[in-house]
Image (tube, rainbow, N blue to C red; front, top):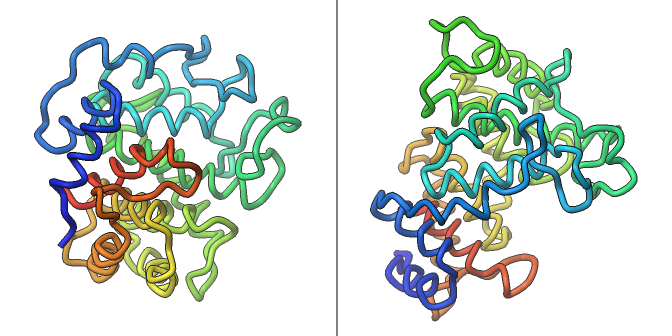
Length: 273
């Protein structure tokens, strides 16, 4: 089994006050102090989304989804800043159901968010649809421009589901990044497109034994967030991989740098809590 106590100990020893607040919410549902939200909610654009450091004051889909994940770890998706960001995401959907960054960001955007790139478009679509799906499940209110009696973001997510399904091949493969696959599977499963979701899951399962700790933690956390059963074979395999990759100090290593090990360890805690 994963040593969850060791993981908690690592976050307590190495994390900052916000990291510890995130851990307390994830493990025990302890509401954070107001100041835990201060830095996370800083800097949204007037439209509601957050900019990336490479995007100046133009709101970024990728950066906004990342900030929503951090706020979700604090139980903060019902707060005004998150609600405005979610509505901004819904408004940024293209008529074909996809999401793509503003063209003005093309020069500085990283490859996974570059406007005009098919793989980036699919990644941003699955990411935006994932967080709107979370909001539709958890957050009170109808969502932007929708019938107050309807499920939040219902029409936006229906169109997103069509766009995602149109991009997945019969063999379960998808355009581009591994993360796009598990986000797509999570969204389609939530929409009861179980066959399409399962085809993707089969392809992901083939790669679990070689996945990094950071990837497998993020994957398991995302699937569980949108209702996958802990007894699903993919999540069982993910827990085994997390057991294999957990370090003696309780942490899971980041794919980027040791400075991000706390972030990865929090993802591991989300995956097995």
